Length: 123
Image 1 (cartoon, rainbow, N blue to C red):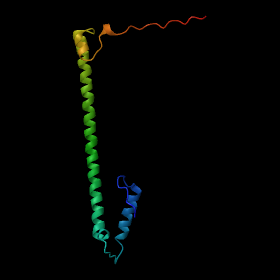
Image 2 (cartoon, rainbow, N blue to C red):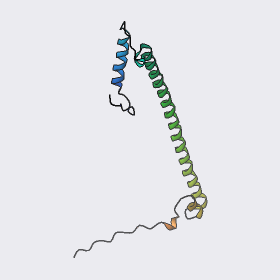
Image 3 (cartoon, rainbow, N blue to C red):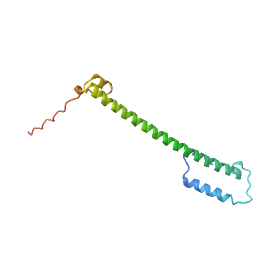
Image 4 (spheres, one colour):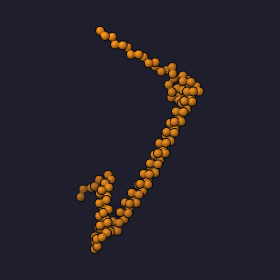
């Protein structure tokens, strides 16, 4: 039997079929095997471990989403604070000051004036 690729998730359809097979297996009487991984106890244990891990994953995803939202809001709050600081610097020191340039604003005197495009002459 070739090795299986366990790096990808099983589809919900496959997991549903496996759960249905386990539920159907519970009605089978007289089942016995020498393979440890196929005993009824191993099957129930594997199913319970899967459910526990799925629950843990769901809880951690919820925590991740909450942390992601908090970080996003903190980034926006920081950005808006910086924009406010730049407005205050521009108002306090002027649009052509070295202080305005120090906080990342361009001096008014260093801006290029717009130029008119030259009209094309017809020959």
